Image (cartoon, rainbow, N blue to C red):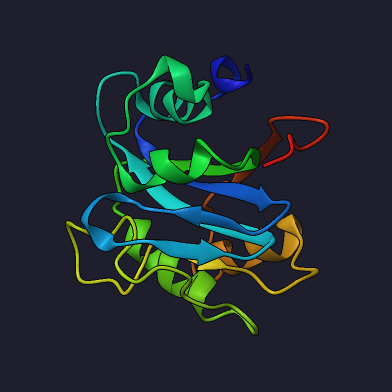
Length: 162
């Protein structure tokens, strides 16, 4: 597990999730949705005890080791997190990052209100255009925030089959 490489500080993160074949997901009261194969970005924040390291470690645990608590738990039970992009700090960037990723060409809302129960965003889960690479995502997140250090880590060398 790579979570020990993340800081125990508060921050904002993006889980880059690869769906390798169509899946059906029922995240809480949102309903049931089909997600086609492709790349999805989930934007979250870590403000509690243990910061980014603790929150991301939870998302990376095997589904049998955790009960679903957040919408994202339902997705990560079916598809692997391949990359984690993050920035430390107390600034609340979660909604801003979700809007920036949604504004990228070819991005779409796969599940309305996913991960956005506590805000007014349309979603915090973004379906990315094929070929959207991590460096482009990092550029989009860094835009207009001079001096912000954004880091990335690969969580696995090959995706598990969904």
